[in-house]
Length: 276
Image (cartoon, rainbow, N blue to C red):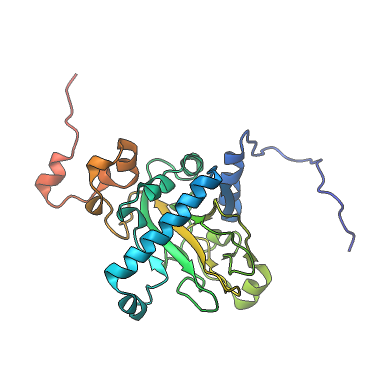
């Protein structure tokens, strides 16, 4: 086989081509085509340190509140549910990261909301509940022409092969069925990302956490953003005081798209038409 030293820059027979003017557009293109991409958050080292410290603080409080033994019995002891509801504005801001919002606006047509935000811990030397192939819209076998939901996995720590970085199956968001084992073994890719970066995934792409061979936990904050036709994992408006949030935050967290509890409630939410 002849080795290609560089990618050809010449082409012919091309009538259409994507052309972009920013790194955010290029990130969005890769998510659309391959199902995944890496995005820099733009945070400073001081901000990353604050996120790391707040993650550990919330985790300690979470274990005390719900009981470590109870969480272990539920296979929930490596997950912190709804991080942004635990009193720290740090995680509200993490979900609203400016770079992330720019890319999501290019990927998801129209309005999108935050479905969930969970802290994820990949423990050393253990199989954990994210270490299996899945979609983030699980049990679904269909494809769509545009993303219905996007996963934004924020790396609190570096992600690498040694500490069980995420495996992805490129372009699997374009096929409805999970592939054969031989195809999986030949085409799965393990990603690398630095602390402070987001791993973006089309939620219909198959992916899995890896096995952590180091002596240290690997931490991340998982976000799922979706069109407002999917129910949130945990009702965020019911667990956050609206008075503490900006109008942009309330929109992203789903305050404007809650299901009506009655016909009267539904009608009250409808805009009044004014005759010309």
